[in-house]
Length: 574
Ligand code: DON
Image (cartoon, rainbow, N blue to C red; front, side, top):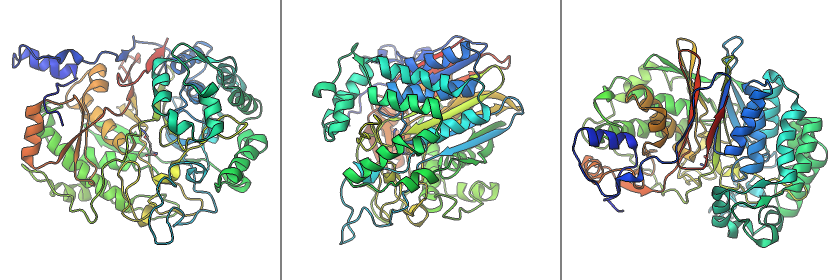
């Protein structure tokens, strides 16, 4: 670990400059260049990982669409221009506020385990985990939910014709779109894995080559699939040509998804997790995502502490945050799973329980995760889920996180239909105590069962104050999604950070097991890191992660957003 790397937060830079603690720090100019922060808009705003997708949202607003129309258009656009995570073959969650009546809803379009799944499907005869089986190829795919999810959002709240919203994406795939630096770099990084399956190579690496920056990428099969969905609705995905193509793909590559799985797939409307923090009303995703409960525990554990005495990179604050995270993630791994299969204790967010748990936070030294089995570090940096935030002048707020799980999911494209399948099955606990791609472990609550939804960390979130819209936010990052969003909320509420500072502040993460604090590389000064080590923490630098897409709504109802500088995203609105 290079302990001498400088911080990248402009906030920290300001503080240091203002207090004259440092007059010259070599390399401090890293700053938060690249943050895309928007002007104030009156009608509607979108923040997403893709400038093209955000502009699709703006275009829909200009045509008179509402935030739900824009979210549907952006979701399909991401399936074309952001194949790393935007998807038809994956799943996700949406948190939304209906501006008409103020109701807040949670929509679950998470993938499901195929009906033929078994608890030990990724184990060999000796009970060992077969490498890559849960993360690569057909057997790693859950039954996709995205198309049903976007359709349900539109059906309930949309105002423009479905066909028009989906056709925007279909046309982009048909006529091609310009490959930007970010996509070209990602395709180059994953070239070997994407070449494993010929159907994937021919879609994303035409002629066996990574498309160059500025080249036009045409995705004809995907265009045909999208035109079909545009014309016939989500039915077209779960029955007929597209469904048949998925089933044929399973037969060819040894997967389990059947026609029956696809026909039976249904989204679930759920009650969001709600809790108060600093008199803000926070709404986030309920099980089968762990996001809302874990975030709620972290923030409620922290609430009584006077955090505003500290800075976002103060060891004192980081210590408290890590201890709260340790407790919350420990509960995650034991108590959370699909509520249709596992009875989740009702007390996880009760004030009495939180008060009890808070007593376990040591004042001046790191706690211990008391590992039953040593957790192994994240196996690799799978960084491509995607989040987009949308809101409009009617008070509609839409926060959507969607994913194929790993970058490009299972790496397997459905032949003839032109889209990637997820590898979400890896989010199950494939063997008690065995860490998944994000180093998370689990047991009974999240074991594989036919038709079950795998536990997630995705945390699309809405924040309201006095019943009025305030923030729409969310991020990718696997298990680190929850701490990324929680740190953004603390940054807003306790440290008074600007939107730009919130999306660019250096991130840190603790998830109980492994018993390590992950620090974003180049994010923290050596004295801060040494202070954490002195507390007793095991510290590890990891590459930058997360991609916050944040919208703030002022008391006057004006909307502005910020897109994380870590990726190529943008805010658009009017
Ligand atoms: O549902 C989950 O928690 C994971 N499948 C999310 C994966 C993810 O965020 C990957 N990239 N950042």
